[in-house]
Length: 281
Length: 317
Image 1 (tube, rainbow over the protein chains, first blue to last red):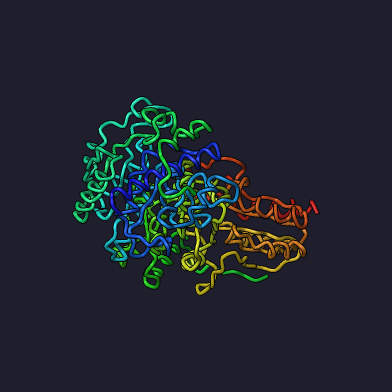
Image 2 (cartoon, each protein chain N blue to C red):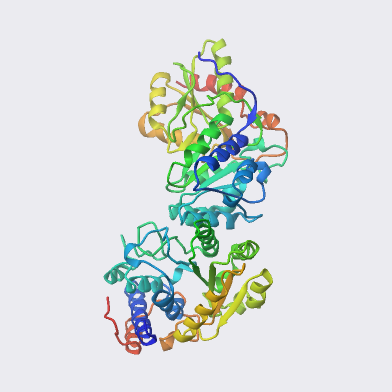
């Protein structure tokens, strides 16, 4: 897809996100909007995938794991817009008997989801396990994962970070959504993360920054650079500098919209800022 | 009464190691993970023969559980190995979300369960693990009784598609079940026939139940001993069939009475045929340092305690 096409999809994904969250008055729009460009780019241009014939094992495919499961709105929207399941199903987000649970799960057979996430800090370990399985199976494929920056406060991540470097997991790219915000405020005030680049490097990872984490061109170049670093005995980490709430002016520059739904008027404003491009669900 | 002969004392963890080694030779999808306790879990042979299929995780059990979940994505059948305390309580959320809720085909193999871990004391002697694991939807919970059965169970669970908790222990105990037994998940094994009392036991308590039955026979009491190696799913039919004959039951396990086998059986009886029941289990307490025999005696987990419980329950009929 061209950058223009990807941008169109991002605008539509933003509409999906705010409409889904508004309808049930719950969910997490802030981080979802912040990662829209990244996930649209990853699924649209980077992942080797077979959306129409989804299997949990994904033999011969690149795999993506969402560790910060609360940004399910963007994950569901991008999966649907990439053909994993009907776009109309986005209308069931967080409703009783829906496959689109508040946090992603394999429990109901939703195509595109390979592990449950929501309780934070587990996705990197899962992705490492999948990376090991791909290596055992002799596949030349890549494993990707996405994590919140606040999520790195969970200690299990550092077990995984130590393991991946110590065991040459070099078919794996972990991306940190580095928006420097979490539910209770700035990461610096809740629990400072310190110098993330230095920390990952000290553990033995290759680290690269995507400074413009909401710019599709920058994301695609960053992902290509990250992929070029694989196969050298080291895992790769991308620090994706994003803006929480990106694309909806009143949700940007604050942590307030981490887990809060817009009201009717706010929805109207958000949609006016993001005119329909590919058709609403 | 049928006599069961000890073929020579051995530890159930070695049964696990032998079963895992055999799986290494017969099932190329089986992989093993360990959190720095290879020797304690007897995983050496598997590792020696299949180094590429073994993952030393280090002292990081949470990471181990989720790496195991990830390995299933790609068709592997991971067997994780560490002590029962660190296989359950320490990693409950990881098992709950990434294994049980996600429906992953992980085999959680847990050694040194219960007080018979001995001298290390209560930090390592978990008596709550059966309860923790049986509460997870979809989790199969197995506690085999001796070396032969643990080996058979280890081999059998590889053919079952879904999460399994396999619980075994440290000490050398009587090895009395057939070497060539077929292990059927969820199927109780009747060891003696009797009409006066049913004794249902799991794990190390099965041998104690057999010893108790012999002593009871001398007193003219005929006990029906049933080995429940699978606590979940429970073989309700076998239990109900036996109590229909005997009218009373003693349950025996190396676990807290809260959350254990006895509670599961009490539920089956309450729903179908309320029956007097006595519980051989620890009484809502932690363990402590000591030899396995001393601890089993102090916490009322041996043949002597079972005999007393039988006499008590028979009076309640």
